[in-house]
Image 1: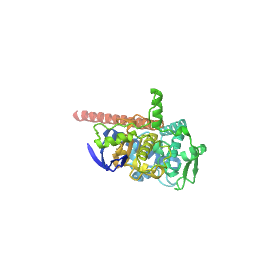
Image 2 (image 1 turned 90 degrees about the horizontal axis):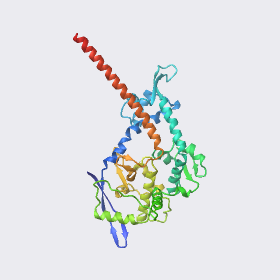
Image 3 (image 1 turned 135 degrees about the vertical axis):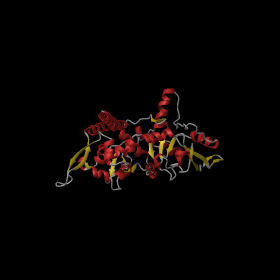
Image 4 (image 1 turned 180 degrees about the vertical axis):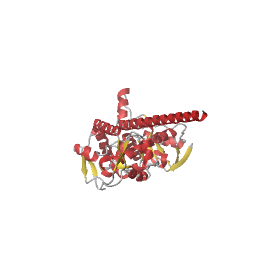
Amino acid sequence: MFCKTKTHTLFYHNNARTISSLKVVWRKDPALDRAIEYDKRYKQCARVVKEVLNEPGQVIPLRYLEKRRERMRLKVKAETFINQNPGLFDVYYSRIKPKSEPVRFIRPSDRLHCFLQEEQRIFSENEPFIVSKLCKLLMMSKNKFISADKLLHVKREFGFPNDFLVDLVPRYPQYFRLTGSPGEGKSFLELVDWNPEFAKSVIEKRAEEESERLGIRVRPNFNVELPPGFVLKKEMREWVRDWLELDYVSPYQDVSHLDQASREMEKRSVGVFHELLSLSLHKRIPVPILGKFCDDYRFSNAFSSTFTRHSGIFYLSLKGGIETALLREAYRGEELIDRDPLLRIKDKFVELLEEGWRQRKEQLILKQERINEDMELLATKVGE
């Protein structure tokens, strides 16, 4: 089903040839939309856990949590949420003030504490990988430094620990220099040293591996796979074919000499988006978040049209009323097949949630069985 048509003006100069006003049709991809939908419940639980963990002593009165429902985008009452997700928190009574009446508080459960320890272990195991990710983000940027506040804003997209700026960064002075105070808007993370090993994109590494396997040189280029039933018009097919024939422009390459409107710059921009999505946890990033980095990565103001124009490389989801860019090659249907090592943290958290959900289901079944037994007993007495 075709839901939306976007028309972009593409100027492609090849000798005397010009292609312009090509119609690019946005087509809904239900499988990739389901991949986003699947994470909604997990993300909701993670938001509530974060809210509690940020409290002094990691405890909070239940009624205070209820007042923050809108901020947490919680659609049910806080008490209902706690009951629906057993295993996350313990509920107990305490006083807010010394002489006040006891009220219900919540605190992380023993199972949640075990998960948090496991999370730290996974972060430690993957610290070199996290460092390389952070270096890559800086190496692709125009000036080799990025606002610390921006990086804090995307830490969950890339799987960085909450305290990476104050804990991880100072332990790697050979790579990073942090100026100012994060959170005050005038703090920046700067790249200190350029590591050539980090300056290879996913596409370049893939070409190298294929070259070694085949024994012939393989040009770095994008995998293009149009969604089922999607057919490009002839004019657009020719544009894509010729565009793919251009040399690959590495996202780590200096492009200060390129014209912003050139085909080469378009190739480079697609390369940056591909690399950013490849570095992200779920191989997808909301477009508004990418938009915060327009200056850093030389994106044009209309950069989101790139995801529709290159529908064989990306998918632009509109799920939840938010535009989200996904990397097609990372998914098989709704399943993420290109898994980031840090996704083990999410897997462990989902295991914790599912254990609680199974426990609640069993309790509800037992409760219903008791009700049925009581009803049968009552019916027997009435019949006597």
